[in-house]
Length: 195
Image (cartoon, rainbow, N blue to C red; front, side, top):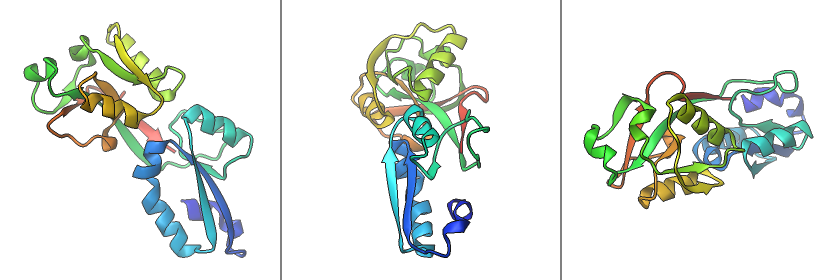
């Protein structure tokens, strides 16, 4: 998709492709895509800026990026949007939390209210994932007790691994281990489109 979007640059075979992405997408989605791009266009430098979705959207509006990886919704009057992948959100819970004794080791279709005791580790409510977390909690009638508010999801995951709280995270970021249990939420509300 990156290649098809920059067809007008093919003749030059050199230049800079300016991309924006959240840090966890930079290491989970971009390496393979950039490797393929560099095979076809070895003269290009790919400059990746890591930032929050809001910062990336603002930068894209100012023309600072050629491409950005964002989650919907995106203003399609301002941007050309192409689907890249889906991103499933899960609840990552410290294995020592009492709720884990009541649930299977991992599970599909667990209602968010099962985790009402918290505490939670979240990103800020000014971030897309933080807003989504607040919406899911409100829909479930859960009053959220935040133990820590982080700027990025990698830090949230580290806090979960340290036993501080549960977190809503992209599924492909979390690898279950002895310290973390993961649970998919019921319904479709836990799947986001990355564009």
